[in-house]
Length: 212
Image (cartoon, rainbow, N blue to C red; front, side, top):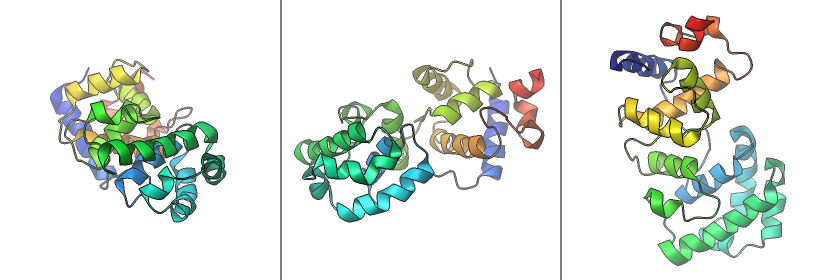
């Protein structure tokens, strides 16, 4: 595991590389982020961003989504994969947000996990991006892969364990943006199959590079 000074160096280099540590999903409303993250399961953010404008134009309010025919929602999101389960979850979540939360996306992990199709990754993303809650960790595939390679985690692929280990080493005020920067770095440099180590400026602190 890394020394605190090494963790800080990694964070600062990522800030230099990716000054805007932002989610790549596009959303004007908190509930739209919630549903966009559901659509992003086993799908790229790029594809989701192509699908959601038409979906949210057809159903411009939470009320309209809650009243939507699931089969119609399916047609708008078909290209994201697993569209039947996603459409069912989106409509059910819209209804639950209205009935149980007055139309507001919950701001606690416990309440978010009650929504259909919402797991810890989605809940952490909402807490970090919408509510700016310190200490949240979004353990997506890029974050799991790269933090394991760097040696910030023990290499586990279990999202819950990665979340726990990163919470222990990342400054709470940095963790959410750090995870967004992991995604950007994973797409640009530290790819799954063929990481571009020679171009990576995180090499001085990377266990994977040192071993290889």
